[in-house]
Image 1 (cartoon, one colour):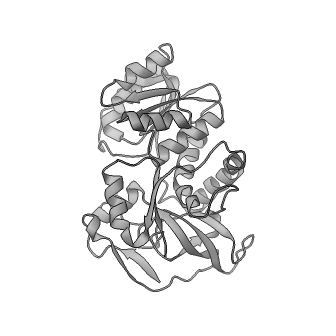
Image 2: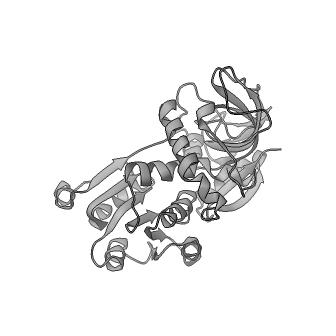
Length: 326
């Protein structure tokens, strides 16, 4: 088979489409013939040499894919060769075939095409686990999403609206904010021109956001705490704005607020399987009802993954950039 490899860390040109050995499914694993994968920030960090795959994971980038079941390892039940699936991966999605733990497989949702389904596993699992399983967003509460036009952001808007929450988003352009509004966002904040703390407080009558989903990390830490409501929950899922920030414990105590930080890739298999199972139970029915849909900016051949990385690094996209296998 062919896969995108990274012989040496570097820029997008470090991604090389080359022939590699076919993977073989072990016990409890499924071999998937890949239809498409998607570009995530973690893939870019891996390409740059800053985010190695967990021990035992595929060395190729790609944290999600869609495709068809090609073979079953021993001990696998509930799946059959030919099933159309999408999968949460620890790596290996940028390839023609990938091995997946059976607990990380999902059927392609009703009403979603096979290629488009590659846009779902990583973002849905990230949003559901952080916003709902950890931060417990409830109907009537306010969610603030940083990077509302990203893959994570576009899914967070839709899921929050589906449960009856109010959604505020930050983005860096009028076009991106308009797309967020089309998905249901109620409060639109251009972070280049507006203070998101003031805007969120104004939109909530001074109360603040009940839950904040943050991909920036250190740069936004203090302002995020300021923007939280009493009993608010800040969920940090990225470090695009740095690793180390100053936390005002006094403000946090006064608000009886909480800060959580999670990553998905290196979690134990049983934790990932639990998240995937929750997503299948709670989120997959929303696709059938048309309440949620994948947001895909563009598709390109997997062999041109370097261009996909350039697009995502330039942040001109909305939703997900997909890499389609031959």
